[in-house]
Length: 391
Ligand SMILES: Cc1cc2nc3c(=O)[nH]c(=O)nc-3n(C[C@H](O)[C@H](O)[C@H](O)COP(=O)(O)OP(=O)(O)OC[C@H]3O[C@@H](n4cnc5c(N)ncnc54)[C@H](O)[C@@H]3O)c2cc1C
Ligand SMILES: NC(=O)c1ccc[n+]([C@@H]2O[C@H](COP(=O)([O-])OP(=O)(O)OC[C@H]3O[C@@H](n4cnc5c(N)ncnc54)[C@H](OP(=O)(O)O)[C@@H]3O)[C@@H](O)[C@H]2O)c1
Image (tube, rainbow, N blue to C red; front, side, top):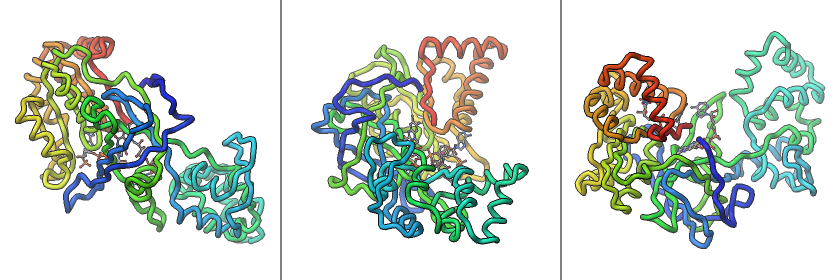
């Protein structure tokens, strides 16, 4: 996705301290996932956005994890530190650095090398030497993938006893903002940006783990109370400039977010082009995100078609690209008629499989060979009629 700067007082380097005005679970009881709807209040910020833009959120880390690291270091949290990655003129306190400025995840081999240099325990030294051996590259990566800094400090007590706060923060990377597709249109919600967020909670190496930013929004940012630093990340992703053009939108899971914005936007603008949404998730009963809103749009003619793919309601997986194939003739008719084709959501598998299905449908329905269908898709991209927002 290409980003364009958005003119405002507030930006990535100076985010607006917004408040969350709504935090609501989108799934129903029995869902195996936690997907939440957030409304971010932008009043007083001067920030503006377009349907298709994303919002950047600068999270803070979990206080419990910060406290555990400080305790494992035998520190108070008040120690002045100058983290190398932050390029600061003045030192800041250890607690502030660990809470708001540095990533507590993703330790590298340098962390193990530091523990190796400090340890006075033979068993720890042997374990570290085995992990750092040149032939152990893969095992080392697997070991690090399952661990955060707090795990390493806990697992090597003799090593950590010699580690100073400054040495630890010197290893850590900057805590980066996370982007979220905005799920509202500014025409419908001029003072708010809505988000559709999958909250990450999982277990690995004997510990409960969480995604930093998704749980910052879900658990730690109290509604109407906690400042949530945000900025707008502009994008070329957006509904057709021509109000008469049709839009085909493929957005399973949280990928549906920008398409909620597109439909709101086109409805508010009175666009005559038709809207066709392919949505999918695990189970219809529990994971039909924004079900009532889609029903309203269908009834009101703002959505011409809604095709649904529930992957876990039956033995065999059914995905959005299966629904595209079932509707190949009509899909091709829309595309040939100038429809824009949009995809949002998982980049690793879904977007690739949807792309393959699109190529296949164009080849079959258009009577083209693979090369001609690839050229057709290339031309759609060049004309900005095929756009993706994938992550
Ligand atoms: C342009 C763009 C738009 C986006 N839009 C949205 C959106 O609308 N909605 C949305 O929810 N997200 C969206 N994302 C993703 C979002 O930015 C974050 O990456 C996501 O919320 C995770 O961030 P986090 O801080 O909660 O997790 P992090 O703390 O960054 O943790 C994520 C990491 O946890 C690890 N992990 C996750 N699950 C497991 C597991 N089961 N087992 C082991 N390890 C695991 C992986 O290493 C993963 O990289 C978007 C991303 C981009 C780039
Ligand atoms: N690359 C990744 O690892 C990745 C990417 C995006 C999201 N996630 C994580 O998944 C959680 C929820 O995210 P989400 O709600 O956006 O989406 P999601 O749960 O990953 O997926 C939504 C729907 O897409 C289906 N799906 C899986 N593989 C697909 C494919 N190849 N083609 C088409 N559809 C496919 C899923 O089915 P099944 O699950 O039943 O197969 C599910 O029905 C979050 O924790 C998020 O971080 C992981």
